[in-house]
Length: 94
Image 1 (cartoon, rainbow, N blue to C red):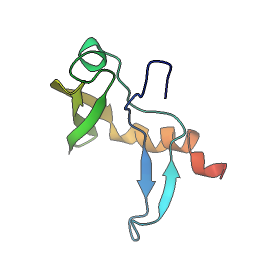
Image 2: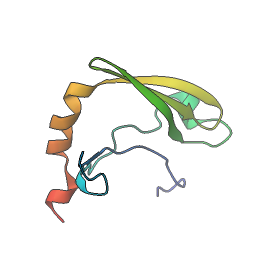
Image 3: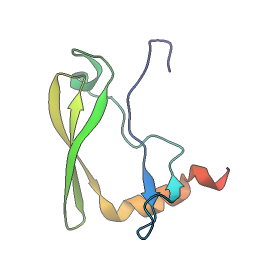
């Protein structure tokens, strides 16, 4: 919650491969938040939400909605996610 209302954004989590009900790590920071004009202004301001993703080797393509008005594409490197999550693992404090 912010002074101007709710922000919708994405965190990162890691589930156990053998038991996906077991959470191994959970981020303490957001990895993706509304930032661009098409994400901060629209039918519903300050909203990003995942619609689907695909990987191609080390490349992750995240198709996402922006401000309930547009669909966009964000990219990331899969190989960078475990190290980032290790540094920002909220479960270490719980």
